[in-house]
Length: 393
Ligand SMILES: [Zn+2]
Ligand SMILES: [Zn+2]
Image (cartoon, rainbow, N blue to C red; front, side, top):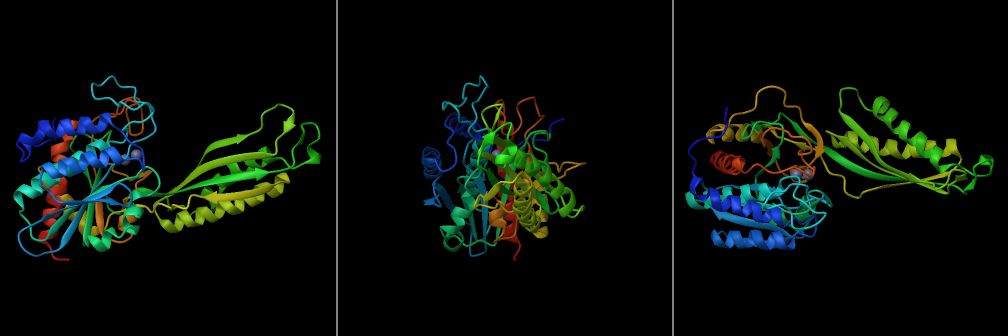
């Protein structure tokens, strides 16, 4: 059963939009390197006669569409960056950059936002302004925060913000707008244990960084189990553990990196403090020293505000889309859309990308964005803006 509407205000633009999506897919650029991507988006905005400003917080772009008469302003956001993955598909528009790939569908998100802009610029069936926010560096470095730091919210004041992400495993075109949490906040850490190094048969001569690392691995899981309120969701994952090179030498150093996830910033901060105390305790047990570093960038969770959640649900109906029934739990993955929500009320929807295939989920080498959802997703954003601007806040 199809969940995609039959007739569509952008139907005649479909071919052109799909070509744009494929061009973006073929030229992936990772966080902070989106120069070609930004120039390509700028060119498409020029073609659509939509004014814009460039280089906001890196390669960020904000385009502005004025409606009929005075009113409030709304931001619609898409992310721009690709990932360091080698694409394994044989698609005609597959990545032309070795080791880089649009494996999260941000090529699709940019196309959706351009399509929403084209529709809004044609219809102008709203009062006030809609700002299209093309945000770089979502996967790393916090591009949302960099745009805010560059004065985006002062230069383009808005009352609300909306965004979306394609979601493999959800029927194509079906929409989820969560109550409250959508995506987790994230915090990355590096723990280094250091000792003197010793003969493997003489452990009493030096501390043991590898043993400390082992204690840290188990200790941080106990922090999740015992420091975090059982009603809260939290994850601590150690993703790398490096140290040592020989069977009979206690090395001088071991290094672990990992990530913390939670739906509340307070929980993330609690876990961050536990990383420090667990590392110190592990070092004390193993007789060595510890040093903990956190990525300066703590990404807040994406949590929908109630009024904007309702607007997006109404927008889904107005766009002829189905709200997904059943289990729609949030994800422990993160999105720095949360950095806009620190300043503004807003909502972030998932739109189904179709069935989840082996090795073809988000961040996987056979992933592909579903072109059939460009038009419905564009109308989801456009209708969200129109409905929001019809309601005074
Ligand atoms: Zn991603
Ligand atoms: Zn993404």
